[in-house]
Amino acid sequence: MRAAVLREAGRLVVEEIDVPVPGPGEVRVRLRATGVCHTDRTVVEGGMPVPLPVVLGHEGAGVVDAVGAGVTDLATGEHVVLTITPGCGMCRQCQLGAFALCEVAAPHLLDGRLPSGQRRLTRGAEQLNHFAMQSSFAEYAVVDRRAAVRVPADVPLEVACLTACGVSTGFGAVVIRAGVEVGETVLVIGAGGVGLAAVLGAVTVGAGQVIVADRSVAACRLAVDLGATDAIVVDDDTDLTARVRALTGGGVDAAIDAVGTPSTVAAAFTALRKGGRAVVVGVADPRAQVTIPLYHLIDQRVLTGSTNGSIRPHIDIPRILGLYRAGRLPLDRLITRRYPLADIGQAMAELGVRPGRAVITF
Ligand SMILES: [Zn+2]
Ligand SMILES: [Zn+2]
Image (cartoon, rainbow, N blue to C red; front, side):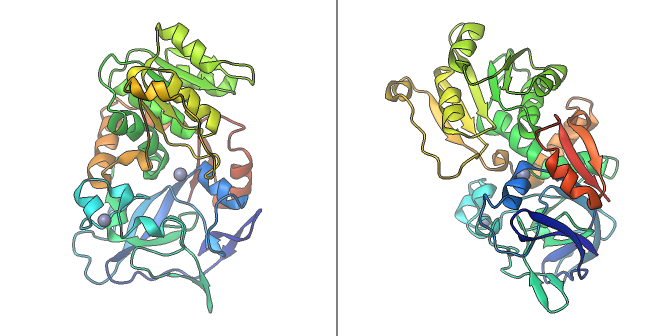
C-alpha cells in the first residue's frame, strides 16, 4: 500500500509499504479521507520528538476492512472515524470520563506504538512506527478497536474524518471543556481548522457574541462566514485584551486559545470577565512558560487546557456528526482543499497559507 513515511525531519515521502495485519482486539480500516493537521507538520519539521521512520496522519476515517481476533462488535464494511484519544475504558481516567488522559492509551500517542504496545507497520523486514495510534496518511491503517468510532454511513467520510482531531478539539473545547451556555460571550484566538471548529461549536450551542482573532484577513473572513459576530485581525501591535474588553464591555465568558504561545495564552486569560474560563488547545511550543497576573486568578478566572476537546469519543463523535446531519453544524464548510496522497507535500506547504481545513482523499 502507499503511505506517507517520515524518515528524516523535513522529508515526508510517499512509499510502498506492506498492508498491515490487525492483531487481537484491532481492526484494519481502508482510509477514505484524512484531515491535514498542524501537528503533522510540526512533526515533519522536527518540532515534536517521535521515533522514526514513522507513517504520519492522525485524522482518518474509512471503512472497516478486516477485524482481528476477539473483535465481535464491529464488522467489515462499517464506516468509522479513527479517534486520537481511544481510551482503555478501565483505568481511573477513563472511568472518570477523561479518555484523553487514559493511563493505557495516552502514553502511546507519540511513542510509535498501538495501545497494545505492538507495531503493525512494515516494509519487508523493516519495522515502521505508528503516529497517534493510527498513521492515516496511508491506504490502510490498523488501529485498536476502541479507536474506531462507528459513524452513520450517510455522513461523507471527508466530513467525518475531521472529528478524529480538529473538530473534536475545537468543538469540545467550547462545548465540553469551557461548558459555554446559551448567550455567553466567546473569544477564539486562531482561526485555523481547530479555531474555526470552535467558532462553529459556539454558534451551535447558542453563544451570544463570538469574537475571532487571527493574523490572516482571509481566515477572519471565513470565521465570520461561519457565524463569528466580530473579527480582530491581529498584528504585532494589537492589544488583544483591550480590544476584546472594549467589544464586550468587560471581557468574555470563555476564551479558546487555538494557537498556544505565551502571549496568546496570556491574552486568552486576561480577556476573561471575572469568573470566566480560558481553555488552551494549541501548543506552538511545548516548552514555553506562561506568565499571568495573580489577581486575575483570585477573581475566579479559570485557566486550563484540553486534549482533543476532552471528548468521550464513542458518545461525542456521533453527537457532533448528528448535529451535522441535522443541518446545525456545517462541518463541510471547513473543508477548503482536497489533495490525493501523492500531493501530501503540497498539502503541508499550504497549511496556514490558505484558510480552512485540507483533506487527503483516497
Ligand atoms: Zn491534529
Ligand atoms: Zn484508560
